[in-house]
Structures are given as structure tokens and as C-alpha cells.
Amino acid sequence: MLRALREKRLSQGKYVKAFERLWAEYVGRKFAIGVNSGSSANLLALAAMKEYYGWKDGDTILVPALTFATAVMPVFQVGLKSAWVDVDANGNITFDNVLAGFRRHQGSRIKGIVVVHSLGVPCMDIVKIRRWAKAKGLALLEDACESHGAEVKGKRVGAFGTVSTTSFYVAHNMTTGEGGMIATDDPKLDQLCRSLREFGRRIDPKSRRYVHLASGPAYDIRYAFDRLGYNLRMTDIEASLGLVQLSRLEKMNNQRRRIVSWYRKGLSSLIARRLIALPDESAGTRNTYYTLLITFLAMPPALPTIEKIALALEAELIETRPFMGGNLLRQKAFAGLGRPEHFPMAEFLHRRCLFFGCHPMITRRQVGHVCATIRRLYR
Image 1 (cartoon, rainbow, N blue to C red):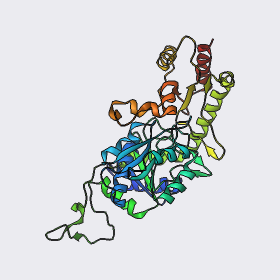
Image 2: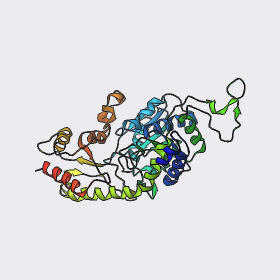
Image 3: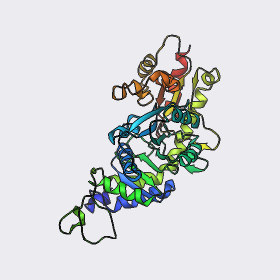
Image 4: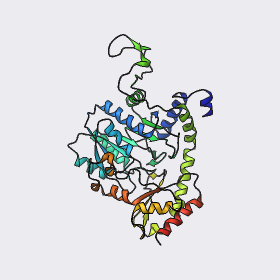
């Protein structure tokens, strides 16, 4: 970062290019495009796919009913519609639920699917979903914003979608402070994302300096705008931090997994009595635990709501969060787009989950305090 500052490389430049190249290599893709957030990555990815595939306003995308809001908001921001899909106990959509959602909305001009790998726990059905989507001619936006380095069948998440996205927000497994990345194997989608990232500017490294516009004389390509775009670039300062963070990611992920093993041991009695549940790690998958989700299968006698549990924990200096936006159909931003009760697992997790810190710097003593406090809730 100091080198970038000394070189006065403040905006997008060589460090962004280096970070893009290494991220594409890490995920196993041909191209990566750095942007200013994971939310922007989703917005650009959907805008690019809409233009590339010729989708029309009102075409439909299958989306999870429970997730972070900006995994779904870009669907509406680019003029598309949603068809909601329920999730499993880990908060991820399943192949069966995708099929059910597809059948319910067959008359809705379905064009694609948003699959989210939630909280460092990968969608275990991503291979099935990808194969089925390809057979149906559906594009797949793979949101891996919360699951850096998680794996399914030996491949890192982000390697499965038509386009994939990730976030480097400060709380995630690795960070650039703010920042995000898009990845794809399709050179045309790569160029579209780069154009949309920079005002809709024409991106053609092989072009002449002066090019034809829609009309008039030849004009400098640096100010040739082919589409309505955005300004969502990553800075070289952010990228310089990302380069170092990426070199440490596997070590940090291994420590997160170790911390979760401490939680499992400390909460084993409650897990055995089926009072609480921690995320599965299905065969052939690897969790990287952005956070640790704990589901309260049975509520403590004196604490009948998740709100009361959260406040009781905060009184012991234990900070928690609910499952992101929860059942999004209960949010004002999405009200009226569906019946929240029609998605029973999303509704259950909305009312029964909290997630807990597993940052690599958390100590075993701190984990012990959290576990002891949760155990006391059930006395």
C-alpha cells in the first residue's frame, strides 16, 4: 500500500490488474474484473448478462428467499423480476427447491438463477444446478461474496457460474476495506463488465486511437461511450491490500475452521440434545466460515424469541447478527413480491438464527465464554 501511495497510484491501475490476474487464478477462471464492492459486482454482472443474452425488462430470475439484500436487489435495478426459491438449513438454495421454483413460474420467461454460497458454507448442489441450468439455457450468477476459498468437489466457489462475484468488505474472510470482484470464462462478458464498470466506455485494446461513434467524425476512443454505464472501479490502494490479503487467505481460512471446531466442542452437549444446530459440512465440500451460524432449534425457556436471546448475549458482551436480511419477503424493500410464509425454511431461519464471530484473531478463551454463556441459557 505504501508503494502504491509513493508511486501516486491512487485510482485503478497496475495493482488492480495484478489483483485481477491473481484472483482469477485463485478461483480458477480466465478473467476477473475488480470493482468497488460485492454489491456492485452483482449489479454489473446482471447488467452485463442482460445485454449479452438480450434479456428484456420483465424477464425473470430465480433468487433465494433468504440472503443478503444486494444478492437480489440488482435483479430489480436492471429491470428484471424475481421468482423466489426456498433454502436449506444452511441458508443455501437446493436443486429440488430450484426445480420447484421453476415449475411454479414456468410462464414467467425465466432466464437465469442467482445462487448464493452463504456465510462461508457452499451450496452443496451447485454442480447439479449448473448442469441443469445449462440444459435449460439459463445463465447462472454465482454469488460467492461471503465464501472465499470454500470448495465443492475440489473446486473453489466462484468457478461454477456463468459469472461469479465476491466481496472484499472489511468483515469478510479477506478484505480490501471496500471492494469486490467479478469472474468469468467468457471474453465477451469480461469486456462488457469492464465497459459497464467505466461509464459504458468502449473497451477494445486492439482498436485504433480514433474510432467511429454512432454518428459524426472519428473520435478519441478514451471518450467513446457505447452503453449506459457506471463508475464502480477499484482503486490501486485497495488492490494493493488485496494482493497481500490473498496471499494469507488460506492460512486465515484454516484458522477460522479451527475456531469453529472449538465452538463445536464447547456446544456439543446442546448439539447432541438437538437444542441448537451448526452448519453441515457435506461430503465433498469445504466450509470457510465467514461467520458461524447457530440455529436455535428449541428456544431457551426464559427467552422465547431470537431478539431476547440476542439481547441476553449482548449483556454478556457477546455481539451477534441475524441471518443477513432474513426472509427478504418480510423486508419493506421486497414487500408484496411474494408470501413470506410460502418459504418455510427461510421463515424458520429468519426467526431462529444468529451468527457469531470466528475471525482468525478470536481466542479460545473468548470462544469458551460464548459457549458457556449459550449453555447457561438452557439451564
